[in-house]
Length: 605
Image (cartoon, rainbow, N blue to C red; front, side, top):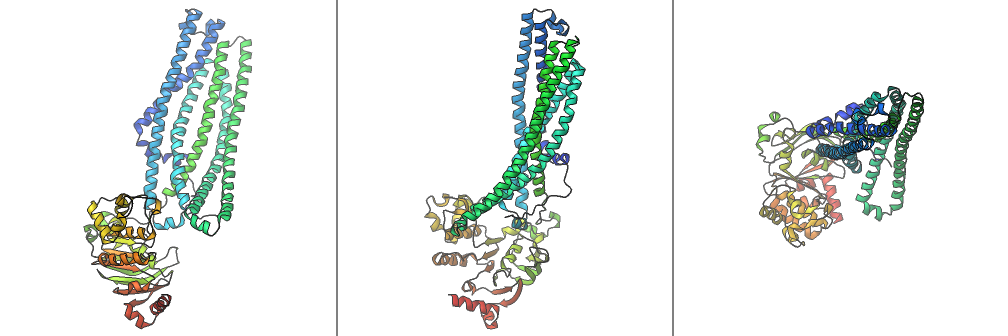
């Protein structure tokens, strides 16, 4: 079962250099550490290139090939000469051990800094996207991009980019060294690199395509896992375990097949390199043996070349492995770039464009909908030509059948979406001219199902803002939740599990009321806020509402019409349009849609 995603691959994809360039701003933040790690590559490469020369000199000393022995060793005895070479070899080993440790630490540190920076920017961007994006984007796919893809980028930089640079420097040093020893054998080894380079490029391009598919299938897998875990009660109550298991098996199989393709292309590179390396060594032995037969080459130089031929292909093997990792990283950059390219639809205007009223932060709570139309999809309106006003301190109710557009009005007022047409004004100011933080500070919303975060009770009321404890307790007392909190094991410090699963539905809703009360908003919105409460808890809430609604503008959405009898005005909606307006008695006398809904409600009771 495919899950639609709002992210689409761009037709004109960026090339690898452009994708890599997107990491440059993050690398610049750690330029000193990065530069030091690159500088350390040079002594590492030189020390590695010296070691085969030392082995070659040892062979020449043992065979008495005086012409090939370094001048500093010619006047020494065999024992002294070998001891000098052993000390030099140990020195190169110690240099590589020390420098490799420091360089590896620095690279990993930079990689983690870049990963953290990208993860933070991605999180900030995602949390700034509009509700429209989250309506379409499965949570599991989003989490994959925020975790797996970002980690892949860290690996790319820490083990990939600097590692490839290390391999290139090492290759250049080795190539320069072997050409100083014997140009014919050096040319043979370098020529062997040409077909290898083309094969690596081909297999890695195929790996890249396969890896993108792996990421997509992993996102699908995570989305299905998240969906089943979140809806586990429904899965079990309706006995969907077997069906969902089969659906998961299908997705899991697609993911396995995609991974197998990447394994095949990765293995093909490794196998090719092994074969070419063996051929290169055989070629060096054959050509070197012929030169020795012609007395044009010493055994010491041939021994050095055999070691160099092995070391020449070792960086290529590592290069191929890192290139595989690099391709995974490019795939991750592509996918992250798709997410970062999502436009932030709901944005604050520039400070100079904001009205003085909005900037003063004062609000009385007057609301006006001026010819507002809205649709979640282009051309499909769920609200049509809404025109109504709510005076400061006035209490109104929105009533209508399911799908009439009541909750959509609330989303527009809170600016989770912008109207397709028309404008919404608070105190005579278009809400698009009011900073979102300011707007939402003056609007308190209580939904039918409130979300609680993992943490203690106190933090779920303050939501990270700083309030004195007496204000927290006062808000709890106003909403009649203080007594319930004190009954919890640790009172206000009681730890809540994810989504507040260790509280009842009524307790969670009471905490939501306290969460709003402490912020003292000028506008209060109740979206079926008491629908899930038992009679006793609802009685507590109704008493709390008498205090909470005083001197505030209120918008109430309720299916139980008995709870809205005393509001100042009732707006009746049908298919996104206002069909009736008035108080309870006026609408009953009108004998229209409201009267019909009221009659059904009375019959139900």
